[in-house]
Length: 238
Image (cartoon, rainbow, N blue to C red; front, side, top):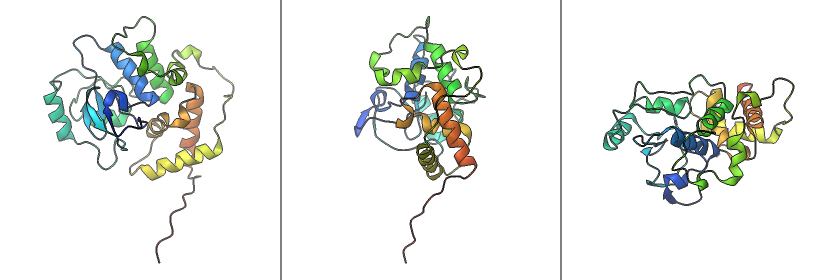
């Protein structure tokens, strides 16, 4: 499962307490639901690599693909140390994290490959931890009450509107701010999924259901793609 851009305010905390983003929490619930007693759910951190939930880490601000992202050699050593280098591996994250993990497990299973957007990711996660799935070991606090509407929304495709227009219209100022942050943060090619992953863990997304979240992500993607965001660079020193 991936790490989370949204983190607790503490300087140091166990990974299981540090990561509080809604996407991470949904992926974590799905991971535990899929795991049997012999399996090992791990977090793939852009900075620290493979983590157990009890591993204590420093707070950080880094996304997969940015300068400083954990390297293949470190990941391979960690996988060997954790005795999982020969395991059959499933990645519950976007493609950038799957690309990182593939440096260790070339034949990994990535069920989210080809997903149309973040709504497909959340629907897949919800299907894993929904009714009838085993969720032993999931503490209630892993899914704070304030995040539950976002995590549970859109569990079934039948719940999605089959036509018409969405009732949610993203705020223009919010769209421009998020698009600007993405343009400034990314030093590589930006695609729709990278935008989805960046937005899902922001405070702006915490109160939105799946359909509204998809509308926000589409609006930000359009803003980035059509260069409608204007960045005011600091004036150069004389």
